[in-house]
Amino acid sequence: MTAQRFTITALLAGLTLLFIAVLVLAVLREQPGSNSYVALADAFLHGQLHVNGCLDEDCALFHGKAYVVFPPLPALLITPFVAIFGTDFHYFLPLSLFAFAGTALLWWRMCDRLAESRDLRALMILLILFATPLIFVTIRGDHIWFFAQSWAFFFTTAALYATLVSRSALFAGLFIAAAFLCRQMSILYLPFLYVLLMEEERPLWHIDRAAFARALRLAAFPVAAVAAYLAYNWVRFGSPMETGYDYLFPISLDRPGYDPGFIKHRLRELGPFAVEYFPFNAFYMFFQGPHVEFMGRYLTELKAFDNNGASLFLVTPALLFAFLARWNRAFWIGLATCAFILGVTLFYHSNGFSQYSTQRYALDWLPIMLVFVALGLKREYAPPLAILIAYSMGTTLAMIAIGGLLAS
Image 1: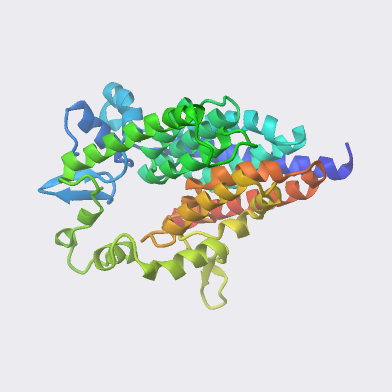
Image 2: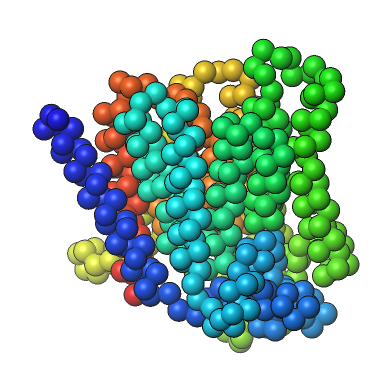
């Protein structure tokens, strides 16, 4: 082993150990009463869809009852634990770590096929686990938004594994259905998965009995999941397309003199989606670096941290290796899927607030891009890739530390 290889390996190992220490600390510090999925699981156990108490602000008030506006699968996952431990259940971080470990295992096996060497496979795992928004949502898995995203990422990864390794349309559809019931955008993976399941030489428009059967197996569980979700919305709000966002943050609950903040102002005055959000969201996705504000006479004292995050591609430039993959049919359909999901979120009222050194909504489409990163890497790219990953890990770790320091 050369001195250069030893130094880079030691640096990556040290950063990994620091991340593990942060994860352990987060688990030890988790407290009850931080995640409304507990309230929703308790509601399910009592045969109701409304919650008796909301543990965060993102609950809709409709006809005098409070409802969790997010898809219900994460609550179903914890229902057995709430049945045992009650509403004081506060082990979301261990469950997030379970999804994190499962994600690592699935990507390790996928990269065994996608990556050219063992070094590249190991670097891909470090990239996925510690240099993307996945580590951030895992560390903050005690809150409802991040817990749902950690499981959605696991399920979309499992769908890709079922497609690329197991070659099972049925299981790919099952996992996408599960991901959809955590994060709705996951349903848009279906065309990409269908193309991956096709023989590469077969024309896209060629339809025969085998193609029809494949499509049926792939769509069976997602169609059932969408139907169940629409029924869930209809029973709660009287409309299958109403998720509850129109009933968030009622003005009647504001205290006198209270500043609702920009998220509430946006929802109340512009709605969940609006073109006015595009410049803000696009700038943070593509151009904004991590930002800390200083104060004092000499501007030497930490004052505030920009918790709207930082550009995914500035923090994790190694993702651009995806564009070195072969530009075949799967690449273009995968890229179109990423672009469509990203495009929708650029008009959304939130870019993922709050977050440090990341854009967490990218997790909705990032698994697709990571497939092409693995396919675009060559053995000779390992040294620069390792340096880029070390940079991303260091930046992410530093911003998490600074954000935690300012929040304490």
